Image (tube, rainbow, N blue to C red):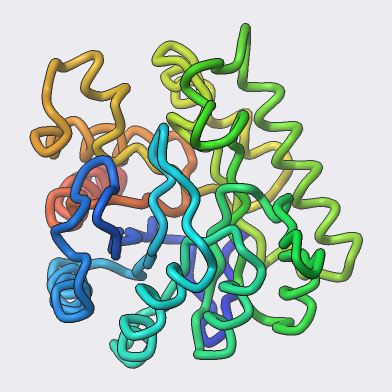
Length: 283
């Protein structure tokens, strides 16, 4: 798949894309509170673009293990002032949300991509609106479907058992294919194995070691290893001291076929991928 179709941009996947994380939250696991105000979040957007981010992912609700759900009104109150300006910064903008109402508002404001940890499974109990219905109203936006076992409140209390690669691959492939059968262009769809979302440390690393198996359904693949606790488990480093480990994991993910890497530390990741690209030119 040479491109990822999004609302305003056809993203070239021949080169790995670096997605910079912008957490507009007080409680995200790594940088919660640092960019919670609109001014701080926009300054962070600009800084990540200056460091080489190809696209940005705005999230107004934490989905870290144990995080409590946020109301739609609260999420929109945090997100929309940042999004209104971010869409004019010259890079594609992804919104990290599972709520169809937030998806609708974000896409109406010009967001390019919906990044959903629930893979469009969550429905609004007040009106039964689904994410898939929202996507039909925006026939060019991109969508990233992530695998999550359980929910943020329980996923690390009762993680998956056994070999996770095939179940994750099959879940994502089926979710993506279901969208295609509803008329969504496959070029709009990206898949994310959900590192840390209901998996053990060993299972997370098996997903990296065998990541090429996740490419079998034929859709673009996003890898989100940045500052994850599994990196801390093998290095002993605290969340804010996992820059090197995160850049290495992102580089390995790209070597094994990932098209997009979602990261906090853009500059370090961009430099690591520049080194990887130089070695590939010398083959």
